Structures are given as structure tokens and as C-alpha cells.
Image (cartoon, rainbow, N blue to C red; front, side, top):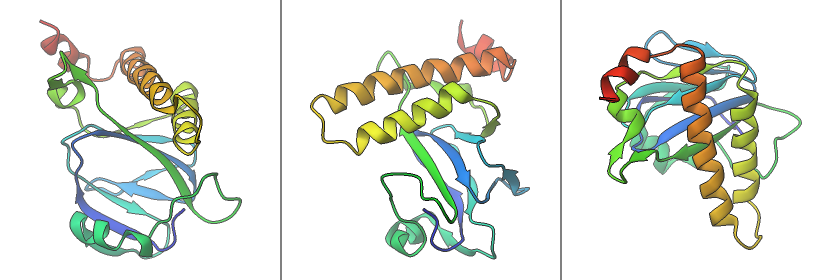
Length: 171
């Protein structure tokens, strides 16, 4: 849940991140590209990108300042609230031979996934499983994250995105 609008300059994570906008506004990149409700932003691990959460005039912070003051800007919820701005996200690894970060090795930029219903469903399933206390949740999350990685690759191939990078890295 977005409490106060914030821009995180040069946001960086070693893991890959998928962010789905439930309600409100998210902007990303140098040109402040807008993410519409239901769209998903994919940020490959290791890529820096500025991200703005919220539609009103945001406060601008560094990643470290945001982490230290996160509770002033966003709050975790177990379900999507009926009102206000909110988003859901999943961070995950995708390694080749348990060593090389797959998406980082492709050197692809952050991009928007439109009409990615399977990917959206997986993000929500992972978040629901993560907030549960059921036996075996870690294994289920791992399996869903693996399926998420495959669906993301399928989306890239089906939409003919970054095929040159795929071809270069497949040899």
C-alpha cells in the first residue's frame, strides 16, 4: 500500500523484480514512463532504474534513504486494499548453472509487460503463499518462482523482445 508518494533514484536490486500496479500510478526510468493499472514492470537484477510510487508530487530519496524510512512511504498488506494506491511485487533469482544471473547476463533494460495474465496470477499466488503459515510454503514459492521465470521467458519470446540478446547468450 502506498502511503506517501516517493521517487527512489537509481533503485537497484541484485534479484529480478516484477511489480504489478493494482491501483494508482507508478513511473519508472529517465523519461518517467507511466505504468497503468494491471501492467507489470520487470526490472532485471543488477539494473538501476528510478521508480516513483504514487500519483501526487513525490519526495525523492536514494535507495538507502528509502530502505531506512520505508514505513513512511509504503506498508505491507496481506490483501489488496479497496482504496488508495497499491502494488504487488515479487523479487526472484533466475540463475544458470546456479551461478550466472540469467536476465542480468542478457543485459536487457526494464520493460513493461502488458496483458500478462499468467504472470500476474503467479505474482499474486506467490504473495498469497508467502503470507500463509501453511506447511511446505517455501517449496511452493520455489516452484511458483520457477514457473514465473519460464512464463517471463515465454512472454519475451512470444512478443519478440530482446531476441538478439537471447541468440547471443544461447551459444
